[in-house]
Length: 248
Image (cartoon, rainbow, N blue to C red; front, top):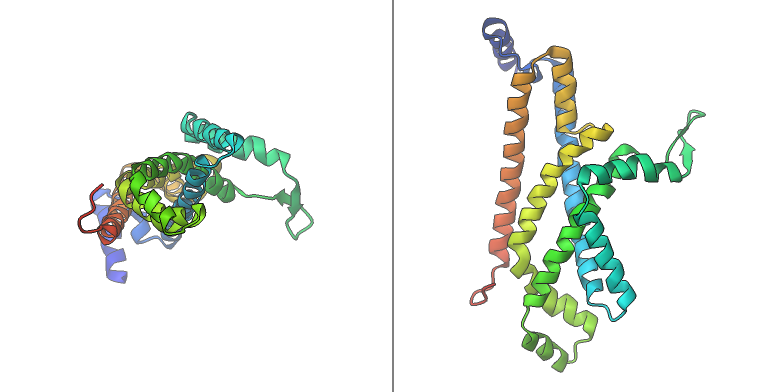
């Protein structure tokens, strides 16, 4: 490790390619924290958006017109407004309506911090698209399959969970994968409210070291690697879910 640090220090001195994250411990910790935050934020938002999408898609098939209208309103709101505006709305408008809590040192702090609002905002944004994706998958399941489940004595809920949803999930998986990839890219917007993700960490480094060019290359390559890993996992997952003889 020391040899690598010496190499990058020489690279900065001799060729003015200043990659401080490889030889400066402070910048390295900042970058690693940003990487961890991005991966954590992406993972939590992916899980939350999928769960909310499944619930929302199920509610779209509810008998109550009010429930269906509420879900449709949710979808239209989050699909037709920019994610950055949504994030700012939650952080600067909604957060001011919530009570503050003690910080343990005699002061007061918001009930939900900036990272929490980023999770909420991005999860709801992606969930709006996931609802429509799951809805399209559910509608693609043949009616005869649903009738067969009902003939076997399945209730509406059990038919949805054990028959309709597994088939619908396979049908809509490619579209779902695209939305999850876009969700990971959207997490860079958390920079706007001070969440210490990758872009925020990189900006801190280049504002002090003035190595914008180098950090932009590092940032781009890091996101390529993260998204390539996600696409690989999604591809393997899709292959594992494939049913022989059943094509979407």
